Length: 157
Image (cartoon, helix red, strand yellow):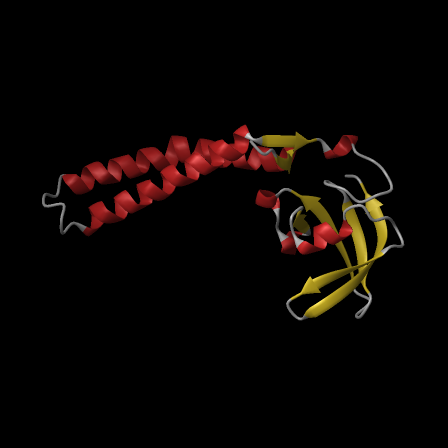
């Protein structure tokens, strides 16, 4: 069973979604199915089929969340330090073509939000940055061609 690395924030978000699905969404869809059944013929009942489809989605997501939570390897970023980029680091880089600076925090797959400055540990950018130090230049394959970034700062927040 492969561990899934995530921050404490990411773990809390998954746990919160799991609880919401179990306590709110699941009971609502069960009620919707019961209501649709009361309308009679199920073969032509669109409400029933929509509710069953929603139930299937919820049950699948619950199974996925329970699996990820069971395999979670929660990493306390506040206890990390070092000169090399690794999981949990917040890295300031500069694009060597445009001189544009950006900050990226390396997080678990479910936590990634590029617009929010969080990149998945499995993303091409994070894979290129991991193990590097301030002053190193990394090259990342991007859809528009290769991009080069210089590491300016590594922080542990």
